[in-house]
Length: 88
Image (tube, rainbow, N blue to C red; front, side, top):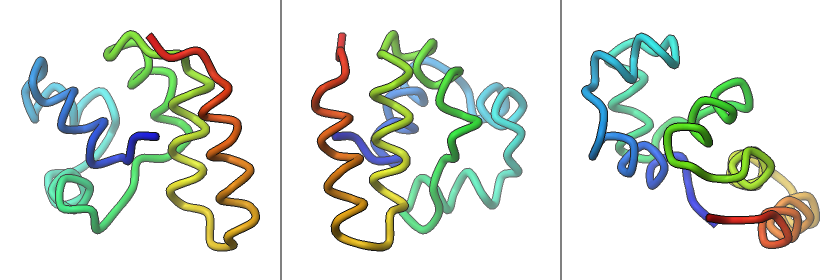
């Protein structure tokens, strides 16, 4: 399981903040909030994040959903889906 913060950290190793903000349609403030664990990437970001990091899009989507889930049972379901997804 990866968090938005971890995914963004992995992306930042390869891409500039300007490129990330432009592609994900984030402003600098939101990017910094994700970087500090105060905001999350959303499902619309999953395909591009998966492509950039060469991960299964279902894995990325499930990670993002699990991270944002409010109820423990829902979070557990998304975590199980993420674990069952193919991770490169």
